[in-house]
Each structure stands twice: as C-alpha cells, then as structure tokens.
Image 1: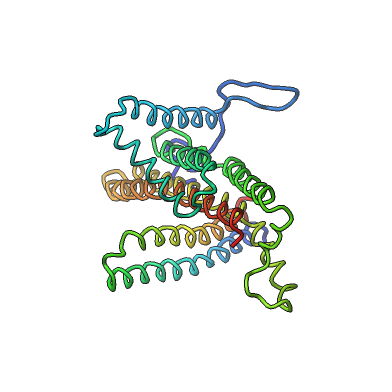
Image 2: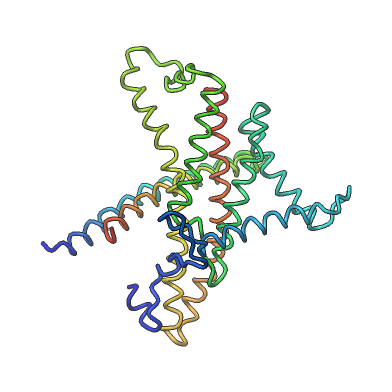
Length: 249
Length: 74
C-alpha cells in the first residue's frame, strides 16, 4: 500500500520520520549533530516561552486576549496539579508545566506541512518517561526512605496473599515508563502515518481525490485533539505518579 | 511457509488485540453518557476523567499496533 500510494514521487508515508542532520557535529566518536528533531525542539521551546512571556508582558488586571490565553493555560495545568498532587508537591509544578507545554507544542508543530514531530520517536518519549520515572522514585525514597517499599503492598491485603501480590505490584510499577513512553510515541506515529497514507491517495485519484481530501481534513482535526489529549494524559499521569510517591496510597 | 508470509500473518493476528480497546472505549463513553444523563451538573468533572480513561484505553490498542508493526518491519 505504501508503494502504490507513493509511486508518483517515491515518497513513503514513513519518510516523514527520518532524521536529517542540519549541522553535523562529532564529539569523540559520538554523533551529536543538530538534526531536524533538535530544530523542532528548539522551535517548540522558543514558541512556548514567547507565548508565555510576551502574553504576560502587559500584566493588566483585566487581561487582554493573549494574556488571557496564557493565564488559561497556566490555570489548566495548575488546577490539574492541585487536584492530583496537592500542596506538598508544589515545587514540582514547574517541571510538570514544562513537560506539558513541551509535549503539547511538539505534537502540534508536527501537524504543519513539511515539519517534523519529535515526539514520534521512541527515544525522545522514552527519555521524557525515564526522567519522570526516575525522578518520582527518587522523590519517594527521599521522602520516605526504606518505608517507600510499603507502597508495593496493597492496603488491606492478607499476609498470605503478599507473595502473589508484591511481584505483580512491582512489575506494574516498573512498566510505568514503558507504558508512558509507548502511549505517546505510538499515538503520534500511528496518527501521522495514517495522515500521510490517506493524503497519498488524493493525488492518485484525480478528481475523485476530494473524498480522501475530506478525510484528511477530518483526520487533521482529530490529530489536533489527540495532540492535546496525549500531552494532557502525560502530564496527569506524571502528577498521579508523584502523588503515589509522596503519599504512598 | 515463507518467512515473509509468516510475518504478514503474524501482524494480522497481532492487530486482533485492538478489539479489546473497542469494547473498552465503548464502555467508557457509555458510562459517561449515563452519568451525564442522571446528573447533568456533574458533566465537567466527569468529562475530565472520561478523557483520561479514553487515552489510557486507546494506549492498549496502540500497544497491539506497535507489536504488529514490529513483526511486520522489525
């Protein structure tokens, strides 16, 4: 299917995920080039920073449109954080807010034509999920010490069930970074690949190509929703894991 | 059996797992509609949890898809 859809220009729908080196850099045998992925990350950070800083520049009591948008974004993540984590974890709010905006802008920027979705690579989402997992575990140990291991015993379980329940709990805890990263990566990969495959049909069908075009328009809307939803789910799961580490059930 | 055909059949079998996600998403939104039908005032709060549940269930479908792609192209 990829061949027939791309026979016109020889572009496979998976070609959008290729890494291109913009500035090749080699340090001691390691390839640390500035790639198109790095460029999109820089653009995402620059846009998020500009959105917030320039929006709040006026600082009026009655906000204008831009300031209102920046405040709504802050309130959205702050409410989410306050509900799930509460007051003890307040110092982790900048981390969750940064994570949310980084993933949101990354997902959305990938929808522009000829751009690149850096969250569609498992190594990027795994790095984010690993930081969350290791950070949350360290927070748990720092706060509770060895008592943190009592987290793996479900409350109210009889002692005879412990040899069965504790390995299950440990395995499900260790699977958190995997599920967190694969959820984001697979959603973005599948969505953008589907978009490109159907878009490939538009040129091939000629006049009847308006039908796949309508589908592509609907799919792009769906992809915008999914971009926002996946960023939201990543942020709320980070908050829930933080709550688990801070409050052990 | 050729290796290529076995890969394709394996990928097709792996994708059957998304049926669980279909049942799950239907379940979640059916509960959401019932809840809003019984108590329209709770719509905002319940909608947030519905979206969280939807994303978590859809992730399962995507795990099946990832395995299928790994079988097909890995």
